[in-house]
Length: 270
Figure 1 (cartoon, rainbow, N blue to C red):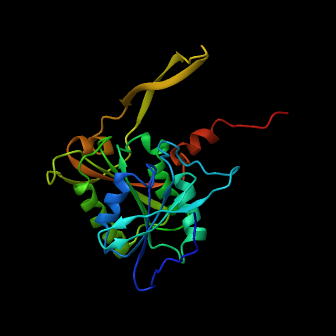
Figure 2: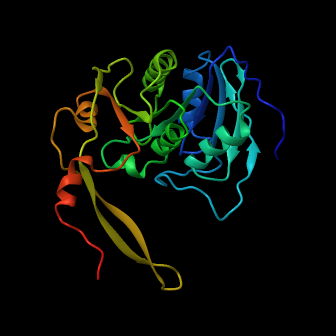
């Protein structure tokens, strides 16, 4: 069911859009809304179902539907919509259609599990924040370094502190913050580090199995490999107990390699 009930978003208060990739019913986004209570007017637009690891996929061949969803915060009901689409879809449709004005900040999370190193490319959580940056809205993605966190309180406190700072000071154009919070006992974070994205890859395996009709199907597994080893990376910071804050941008050009590629003297075929 949908309704045209508008969001009351007075111009004298920041409008903060929350999204994620774990789905609108995930504990992480509820914890994020609780942590950001009072920062401004909150709006939640998140996937109807879990959309982990979908990257920056968008829906182009199927209709998207918006469902009114009960969503409670510490100060009462929060305006919320569940979208039958991806995290990037959620931010697109929220900014372009559902919200009464452009948000002042987009916060994606709190993700169940880290989004460091190469995982940034696969993450729907990061992609929601990336889409906001593409649309010119300051944004950040917040992840917790445990796949099933029992306590989001520290991650929520970090999210609030950074949100307040970004609302006050802004971010460089086309830049988002990728935030990863270590899985440590409450109140035992070592500090905060501004980091770079580590180099890594997954060494993947596809296990072949058989369904009841003896047809093959494949189950993805594998192991994560750190190819970096630097002490200034997101991986190193989180491992040492520090909150990692990595500025990201969506220009994938390898600028340092342009001259080397030009030197190849590439030509069209005769």
